[in-house]
Length: 137
Image (cartoon, rainbow, N blue to C red):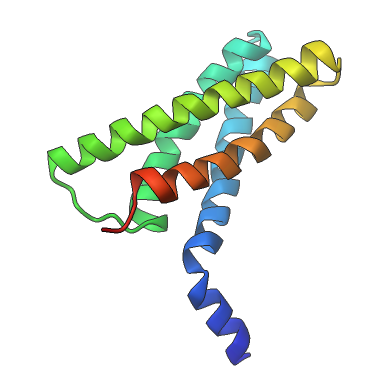
């Protein structure tokens, strides 16, 4: 039991990031399904709306819960938010590319594309956040 607790303590950030990543993915999928299945938007427009919702959710949860960046002054929040959004724009490109490859080239379902792209995006976002956005001084 001590080894398990030690493992959790030593890898808290990664574990919490994965939990928040799952929740962010759920936000992304729910918004995507709302736009594709209820509002009948195409896959790419829906993916953009889902991305916006997920980025807003992810910034707040990553800042305060995952990376514990507690500075709330305007300059720090602006710097973190602009870096976060900038890096997320890169991952949006990966997301759209994955969607295009799976839907338009491999001719598989948009849900398979969405799930596949979310794995790629989650991994790249963790690396971006850890190395460039919420880095420890």
